[in-house]
Length: 532
Image (cartoon, rainbow, N blue to C red; front, side, top):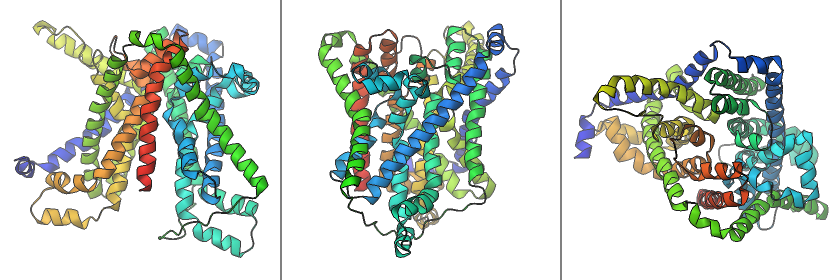
């Protein structure tokens, strides 16, 4: 019955509607911020401008971005290089431990390290050194470097075999091979994955708030929630957007007239080198020091906090906040994957400028910092709610439809994380045999029924992987949930933030540990499943 209904559906109309609605939803918050930002400056904004606080905020943001980018790319790529080219004992276990910091949200790490660094003198020095910006650079670096590690390791394993063999044949040394061949060829993937870490840094406000660093995202938060000044918040948000697009522009400009290609189509495995005794000391010292700082210490500290404060558990409403978290993530995942399947189906049939434009707009959401996106959505939907309230109040509507419900949260998740589903499903489509789609249409199926009967069964594994990635990212997300949640709607991330803000860091360990356990299990499943 469903198949017959799909065959009769005007699939062209469905695809046109989706192709227009998704870019509209992505661009509308940005347009609203730009419009609002050109409003008359408030007294609060003028005071910040006159006192040079705004200038200092811009400089602090640039400084944070540059330092985090440098350190995450260095640590992530060195890990990838070691794990790809050297025989390392317990490699599978170490690989999991290296990526485990991805399971720990940066704001959780910041709160947890407050109970750690007092006991380790060198860490106390790091957190009190201006170079590390009160420890914020340390936290972002330590828990975001896996973005660079995962992308770089995948690239190094598949694309450099011929170059390395040619280098060995020419008698090149290790240093020459690394600096003249491996590093230059890996530049695009290093920069590209580093941008993901920087987007996360620009999206977060909790870490810089907790450590007292005045960045632009912090100013957006202060103007919006402390001052209720939406014009000033929009101006700061616009500065962040300009900075974000500047980073993307610099990355694109840096590879102008340069072409990067793999040496072969069928990739042979790399012959790993056995390190000598001095190399072993350096390699294992580097690996274990980062693993201890990024995974072992924070998780052990949270476990100790839970054990020592177990009597708080009945007061935390753990079941309720976990249910709320799972509810909004589940609804959002189903919505995102459904629309991503429709939009990717449109994309594979498009060519030229239309395809490029649709793809570019559809994936821009992840690059928008969460605080900026939340502000833009609020500006859009508060206007819609006011209009609907005035329109329907005579018939009994006495509440805001979007801004007082989880609808705006789901829309925020959709815009922020849609690009993850879209990009991964497009990659999966490109690996499919498109003759199957043509055969299905020859047999009388339209594109919509082909999607249901052919594409989805073939893409099942990719869809499951996308759902897991989305779940991990949404579970860790704080800024969108905190900024847009309806009154008294509690989730795991907001409770962590609330308790930590009230100096109850040991109590915040309970919801923090739930987030970490769920994320860690899913990350391990993804990593092992990917190998199989």
